[in-house]
Image (cartoon, rainbow, N blue to C red; front, side, top):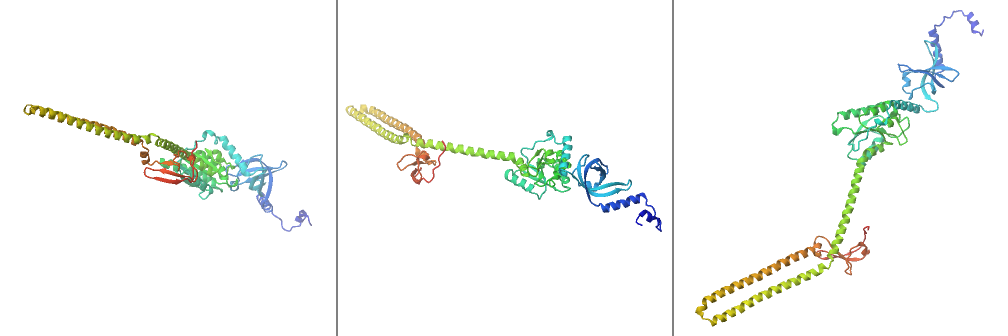
Length: 465
């Protein structure tokens, strides 16, 4: 007898009936052993997120439905939140919900069909925060022009930190760095980044004015979308917006764009670019000072060359060759005048003395004795006055001569040479005033205050007109 029904009529022992719970449990056991891992594609309907954290929904292909449950211990790994109408691929096991005897899939993984889970999650978080106004431009704060202390929220072993330190060391050494170390990828990375931002604000609010953080750089180097996901998490965006310190987001490469970039006060395409932004104002000031200093040096050098050329032209003026000879002539004329004046006075005195002697001889010695004494006295006085007048005139001429010589000496090319200047002449005696007058290899005479040098031209540098 192959029929189970007929066979049961001949069983010696009567089988006891199962309870409904036992039957459902047996069915669940058989299903879970037979369908321990299945993949099913379908559209989500009747989605419900229970307060316990579990998700319940149905899958349909348009002709049939099957219930599904994704428990809290599994759904925290799923990057997006399911919603009705979304086409998904589900991996799980078949089971039976005992109290109702309902067939269901216990979901272990859930992926959107047609686009990645990360992209779906990104769009969902972006839409939610955009609706809340978290990305409004009115909330953006200006980045300080000259920050003294910069906080960096990143991994202490990542390339991003080294890039930032390299740029700041090269362009803005006055900026101090405060590192807030965090994970930048993995399941808990978003939580740590948000905590790091909060920690930086707490430190800054309790620090002295000199130790406060002026700006925060939050970011990491490049990587896959999975690696960068921490900076797409909602908690990171909210931490950035809640920060009292202005935040620069610097995540990945230039083509990467995250939720953190939208929430930050300023987005930098790379960590190095963030450091460039921080150092920009100081570097511009230093460059301006360097350019101004170079222009000032060039202007002073040009002015000195112009003055030097003017002095050289003056030293070659004819006045410096004629005046010394004229001074010598005046000196000789003065000495001659002094000598002639002295001879004239002496001669006059001798003539007067002879006249008076003759008169005295012709007159009575007794009667004229007193008169002779008076005449001698007057003669001596006249001689003294004549000598004094001659001496005064000589001294006046001497003073005028010395003043003239002093003025001429101040204009003398020899006096100019004593201050370190020199006169350059060709072998023919021509004065060299322009570098273009000389040729490579030509020998020149350089006249100094004391002595003369001979030089050979090895290089010519011309000034622009």
